[in-house]
Image (cartoon, rainbow, N blue to C red; front, side, top):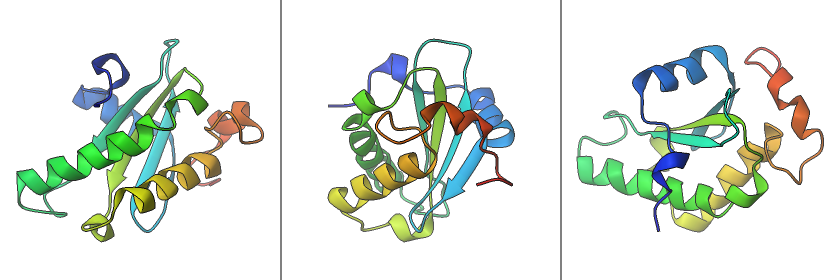
Amino acid sequence: MALNRALRLRKNSDFQRVRQQGGSIASRLLILAWKPNDQATLRVGFVVSKRISKRAVQRNYIKRLLAEAVRSLLVDIPPGWDIVFSARNQIVGVRLPVLMQDVSTLLRRARLLANSPHVESAELNTRKGS
């Protein structure tokens, strides 16, 4: 099951705002960027560039895997955040359980999971401070 349309970032300006003005951290597979939004909802976006794969089918498959990994954690992420996951080259061929673990680890490191300590301090994290 895909992410609800209301939970997705769709505008290019939203992606740019999150990536340029928000905090970010990286793992071997993904780059996570986040920024508080002015809404009472959580919105998530996924970026898989042509450098990852020239084939749209492969890029869309990776986006679906990412969406599924995030969907399983939605109940643990508090509302009020815009989150962007950008795929890195090593993501090609990775299975869902590995991706779910990586997404969970990144969200925990960014303190965006409700069960991680100091969730409210995530907005204080920046690229320099992460």
